[in-house]
Length: 126
Length: 145
Image (cartoon, rainbow over the protein chains, first blue to last red):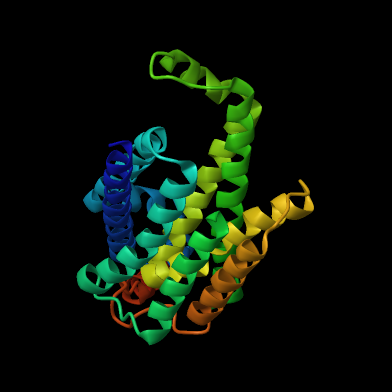
């Protein structure tokens, strides 16, 4: 039963952190290159623009949900299952979500990179 | 990609690794936590390791947000996954932890993945907000002043 809970937590971590990453990425694409913006308008203006982007707050909240799901997952499952399973699958889920929701061009090169990193993360934890 | 942008990517890797390690070190001094001991969780911030760890993680977040403002998510995430390798190498060389052959293989796979994505384009054209018009307008208004 505990294993089922652990996998439920893993699914929640993947869902929440992918949602968070997509929302944060979307927000920063709306804000635009912060380097250029900062040079022209100053750091405070950049921070102000980021904080007043509504999707940014939602993204941070999603990241918070992912963090607490990780804590719950760790209380039900082993560290060596929960962390690598959620981290590696998040790379794959992010590639899918970025393609669907952010319309990023995820070519063969990026798919290979995502899969290599996901596989590597699993091996690191074995 | 300019040198500055590679620096920001390196910052994501280094600050997330350092922040996590500092937090782990600080939290170990406290021992186990329970939900009944929430005030202890607040006190943890007073621990210098924990405080420094939080500062580093905030720096990591600023670098991450900066990178996402000029590069794709599917570029930034794999490109900064060297953090996993960094943690293992720090453990190996500083703390003399053993690295098994399987883990070396994992390090090789991650490094190859990073190389794959870093050699490709960092951004999908037309997706990020173009600030150049705004920058030009600022320049004109500054000249008028």
